[in-house]
Image (cartoon, rainbow, N blue to C red; front, side, top):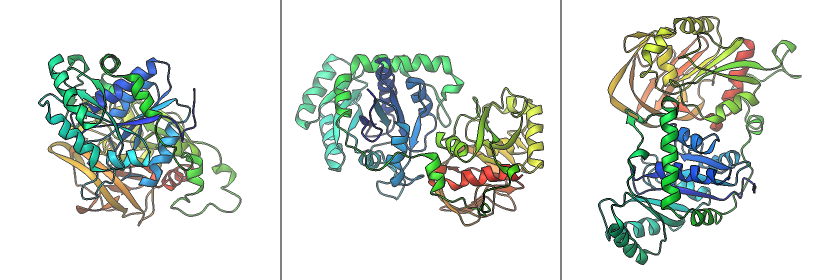
Length: 469
């Protein structure tokens, strides 16, 4: 039975710390509910772009991020309701420990804050592998720390034996928080990791299907799924309307010159084709970006730089988001025909928006492998992880924004680009203070991942430039 997106049953899967089993429980629950014939809306707190791929595999629906830092707390509810349209239930996987958020910003962007914004009950996943009675103190602390966060139950993960389970349940009886599931360690549920976390679904689809099926079986066997559904039905009704790309554009003028009265000239009306990189090397983009581009008048066409030897016919603009080009440097370099076509598109003045992986692809080389050569910069792998939210201001007028536009972004990479910025940098980052990225011809290339729902006008500006370039 479909419900209004503002009242869809929902719960948040949280944990005391990273590595407790949130992804296993959240993804397994999504798959188990889907197997029961429910339309499940999958969500992930924070900027993570790998877990939503597993969520999509589990539910058959687009995995969406809820990030109170990138988009602002006021958009969390509307973006959730947008993703939950037409669904019976929603599962939201948390980030890090439940109360961990943006550094130095209190609860901002934490799982706890998102749970409160969604008026959703929380299921706490606890790694019980090295404790027994102490689990009660841990759960009691999390349940009482913030009275506005409602922990509706606990799922105990990595339980060693029946006797271990008995001791844990006995201790938790006094905590007043029901045990809604007990999971034992199961090897086939493990998913491989590398330098930036889990290996994305697009790179291991067959194995990922097996892993998700194993997660679903473990949750269905070890958890009280009916009790979890009942808990989700206790979520409060969300105020306000669901986010809509067209409405967001209408209420957010583009950061560019206004369209003349009467609209653009006849030659500039209609759809323009925007190519968006996808495939195993470019696995990350927020779903709302494509929706905003479409609402602004673009025909969005996904292509795979690992397989396609040319851009989609009629391409007027190019978006290359995040991913792992460093893993596929040789293959990307070997696709010389596509690299030449990307260079030709740039030389013709077409708009190009590149984030992180896209920045690397546009460089002269990546780990010694020739790339597109659009930017006079080299990229290489590094031992150092660069990770964190960023406050940024546009330094140069570009196809995305005019100088002075403020946006928030996120960095997550183990690569270095030298030099780190061009003569016209893309962003001035406020902390740590520096300039970074490149604005050249129609190119805007940067390490920062931004969420366009926070500034919808950038999509309209980009499409306008596609029409006029």
